[in-house]
Image (cartoon, rainbow, N blue to C red; front, top):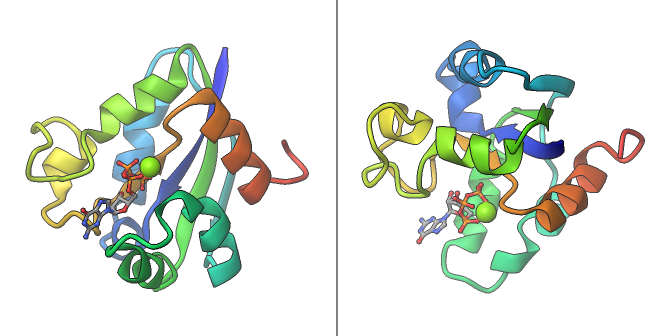
Length: 136
Ligand code: GTP
Ligand code: MG
């Protein structure tokens, strides 16, 4: 089975959507939450996490937003969980995301799209080391 790194972004925490979003993940059959932490991300962690986007016009506002309040970081394990959490989240732009997805149900603006989920096995292992170094 796979593991993936999920972040409930500061907008999700501020809006009281932690339970709603974790509930959707938790109710999927045979998936397990194997680590979970509330923390405020510093610039160094965000530069590691979103390094691929450095230099893009949305990078600086993204880092400012992601450090604007606590996030919930989780490791989820299970069958096809990388693809699966991305499917629950929906596409990056919440307006393009179908109703029924997390971003489609709760989001409007691209930056404040509620949830991060690793996009490949390589990303998952890299991100797990950033957020849960002792666990990974
Ligand atoms: P993450 O799970 O957060 O990595 O989202 P993603 O994989 O769906 O998107 P991507 O990695 O391409 O971009 C990372 C984050 O940057 C997105 O979740 C958005 O919050 C933000 N972002 C991406 N593209 C844009 C954009 O064109 N405009 C703005 N304002 N923000 C963007
Ligand atoms: Mg991404």
